Structure formats: structure tokens, C-alpha cells
Length: 143
Image (tube, rainbow, N blue to C red; front, side, top):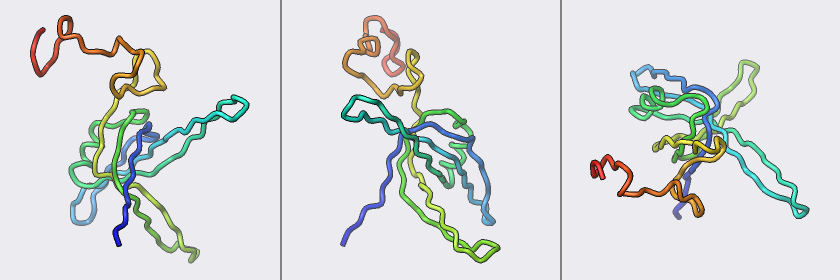
């Protein structure tokens, strides 16, 4: 029987990435990510709840994360859940679930609203449209 273990998150980095090396020389980076869930109750009250995630990246992606990511940066990640366990010095079993990421895209926040990400055209946002008559497109050159 098939199963699925896939995580997709968009959020803000909560701490600068920390790069380490394994005994065999493999790069590994750890960082935190915060996501927000917003909803309204039946009486119209708005609520927001933050969720915090531990991320891990290996190899070349670890080095890219260390070089380009900083606390507060908005990112998109894809990965899978991995739970590790170990025994504490007191003999208790400790579990930690992390998101092992295999894809990461750096996103930018909108200039007019620092809480919203710019992920393309949104209806009613005509300032976000590309106008070939007035804009420079690096793929096409000058208009």
C-alpha cells in the first residue's frame, strides 16, 4: 500500500540557519520557521495562531540556506517529516519531529504590506502586472 509523507510550508525564518558538518564531512543546516493560521469566528472576530517548525537541510541545499537565508526572510519549502529519538541523561526517551527540506524558494514581501508575501498577481493588484511597453524584462531585454 502506498503512503505519502510530504510537507509544504510558506513562512518566516525564526532564527538564522546554523551550519554544521557530520563526521563524514556532509553539510547540515538547521533553522526555524513560523507559519500563521488566521480565521474568523461566527461573530466576526478575527484570530491568528502561529505554529513553529524545525527545518533541516543537507548537502548543497544546506550551504545555500546558510549563505542566503536570515531571520525574518519569507521562504517556501517542500520536504518530509522525520522523527528522531534519543535517551536523555536521566533515562527518558526524547522525540523530535523535523521537516527535512529538499526544495526551498526565497520569496519577497510586498513593499506596501510587510505581512503579505508577493507570490504573483492577485486580483485588484494592477500595480503588480508586467507591462512590456514600460518595463524591462531581463529575459527579453529592454522593452
